[in-house]
Length: 113
Length: 115
Image (cartoon, rainbow over all chains, first blue to last red; front, side, top):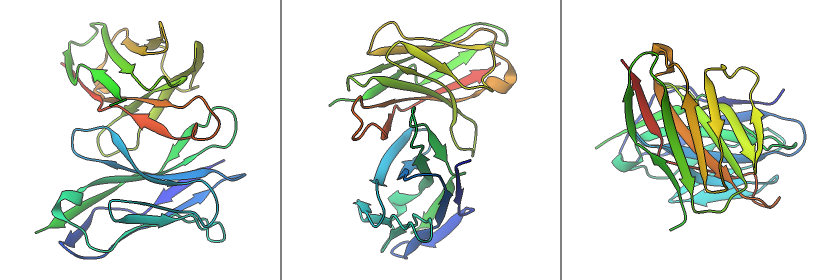
């Protein structure tokens, strides 16, 4: 079946450091891939998405590229801020029928001033 | 702004006392989802509606029910909450058209406490 494997957290970085959160997937067909961010006590906010191979999603300085050859969708940001502290979820959308999501386990990011 | 709204944001109930959580959307999306999220875990899909068509996940307990009276509203009913049902409940919607239908938009969640 389809699955998403996400980097274990927590990840602790200093402000302005470079961020990478790894995400790999297993899927049949060509799923869409997503990164969501969840701030404490809040719902999930769509951060970025990519729908086909080599697509790059980007938003608020975050980027991720859909790599079919390595089945990966790693999240990167060049310079993190304290306000980026949150939990980040990688997800894929199943390609049949209901388009249900398969989520990764989430990675908690803590950015120190 | 078009959005997904959940009420209340915080709900406290007693063990065994029925509770209803609500979700409304102004996005006019055909599909609505209910998720349960426990601390430090990924959201777990309970069920979803495509229009009026209800789709239950195989491992969703019978204690959880849902109603969707119209396109805009969806309700989650927990008939006899147990301590293990304390969690964040998230509502999400997705668009009716194939292009973009795969993107889910989430509400802010309802934090349920069971005493």
